[in-house]
Structures are given as structure tokens and as C-alpha cells.
Length: 75
Image (cartoon, rainbow, N blue to C red; front, side, top):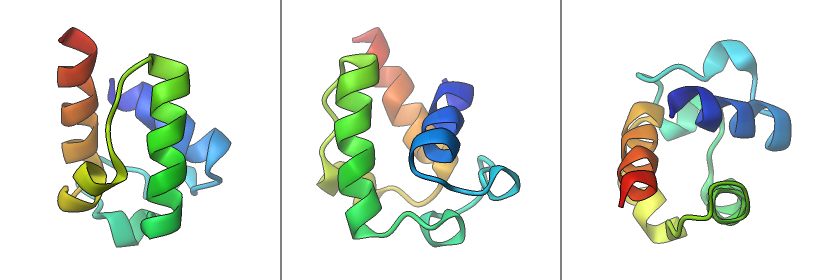
């Protein structure tokens, strides 16, 4: 799931590939409140899951986001 998330962050949200690692926090990769809203919409479109921007803002790292996405995909 991390690889799918990374692809969305790099290809769609223009994050730098080398910055998108599981231990990076949101600020390190450039996920501010506006890009979190975009990410939420992209996750809904691409993976057919609902993750609110508020949920994403509560998570500390890219790895935490990947874990949440993985759980939603399994549900």
C-alpha cells in the first residue's frame, strides 16, 4: 500500500520521490492542509475508499497514512 500512496504523492501531488519515505512527517513531504484535501479526493477516486482530510491531518507520518489506507482497503 505504501507504494501506491507514494505514487499518488509523487505523480499527482508533485512530491519529491526522495522525500516520500514512511518515516517522513507530513511537513517534510509537503503535505499541508490544501494538499491533504487533494490527497483525500485522490484516494477516493483511485482506491474507492473514504478518508477525510481531518483524519489525514491527525496522522504524523507518511507510513501512518499508508497504514490507514491499507486498513480502509481491507474493510
